[in-house]
Image (tube, rainbow over all chains, first blue to last red; front, side):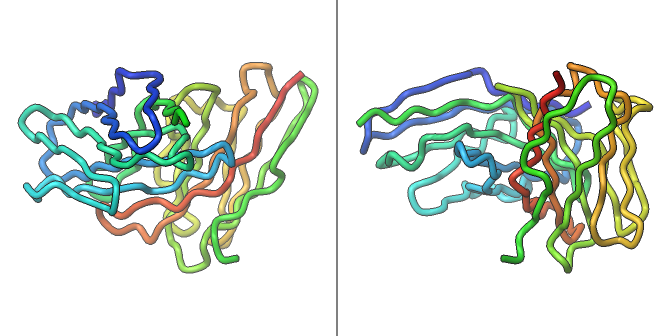
Length: 113
Length: 114
């Protein structure tokens, strides 16, 4: 069975600094996709970034980028120039093909002014 | 607003009562998913539909839980004889059903069982 592990329950970063959130996953599939979702206090899950496993190039969305290490089954999220609005729960997630999405337990990110 | 909407946002009930939640997905979406999220945890998959067909149910879903999507549009999730352990946020999401696409989430229904 596929699993997603986030080993950092909470992290803090100073405003304008860079922070990296870790995620590892386990799968025997080759056709899969990885996601980082953000859940602010408003509760609505918002997609931050998406990575296709067959692409070697790391995905980037403005201040958000990933470090995708396929052999190590690692998928970390880097947030540059952290802003107060980045404070939220961040969930790493896995999807095989068009199957359901499986989520990790999340990392709560605090931004210190 | 054409996003995923869930109703109600909050529900407080007494143990043993039945509750029903509704989810209206984005209108063009074929797939509809239900997840449950407890405090400090990630969303856990419950079930999903392709149009009106229920394609998968989690083993976590006891017989007290039932979900329907009768016309392939909105969906309802019913919990019978609620227990305190059912207290959680129930999230609905929808998508087209394409490989690797993201899910669009609603804001959830927060259930508290007293």
